[in-house]
Length: 145
Ligand code: AMP
Image 1 (cartoon, rainbow, N blue to C red):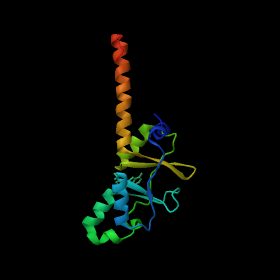
Image 2 (cartoon, rainbow, N blue to C red):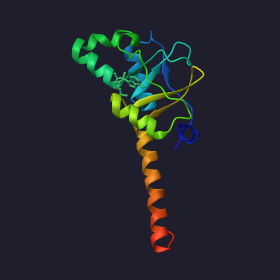
Image 3 (cartoon, rainbow, N blue to C red):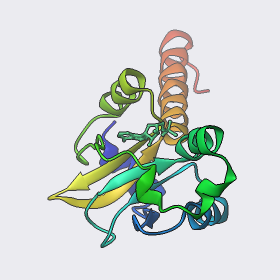
Image 4 (cartoon, protein in one colour):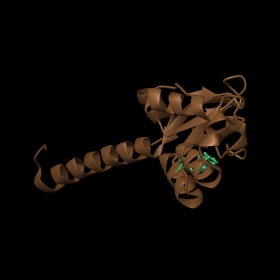
């Protein structure tokens, strides 16, 4: 399955924050959209970084609650691994496993066009397995599930 197939169903909305937004504002955005990470972007198109709830937890543990007033840019990851829409679901699974993160922005011609999360990966993988199982059951028994 291609990433573009996943985005067609889930949509291409990407929640972004600017590097100057405070970490407190980031937490409001994450809570409002019920997500675990936001792409850091100055113009809403170019990926300048990514920041997840894990970065906030780590900063809070290391520096205390005062960190909430600091800018997102102070804790974001600058080297972001992205995929193109024609990448396969397996490519994203490999990236998430290899680098231990749960979010991968989708970029085409240098501009954001979606995000795939571990939740999307699991949902689509389960869908594929269910389709495969009913096809095999039908093949073996001759019955439609
Ligand atoms: P996550 O598991 O996505 O909450 O992120 C875990 C850590 O990886 C955090 O430090 C994130 O800033 C970072 N991170 C998340 N997604 C990416 C990505 N696609 N490329 C590089 N770093 C990432």
